[in-house]
Image (cartoon, rainbow, N blue to C red):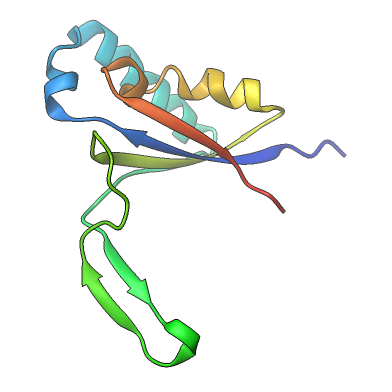
Length: 111
């Protein structure tokens, strides 16, 4: 049985970078993501985050906003399966954040 690795991708991008990318390039990237979703990739646009803490299991606190800060906002996430990191990079490189002047991180999940 062939077991594929799972990768989490985190896309960063903003409207300014998206808007300066040619429509045909953006359209091809959205079509690429639609094909990935058709094959079972779990993908979504990031909504407003909250931070959850429960130090020493002594009580939950929740704060609005991201803990992480970066030069670009987080735009979305995906869970993809691929045979290798190189294949996962190839898949991520055709998505909207990668082609529209943003960046996509590819994180291998350790099991």
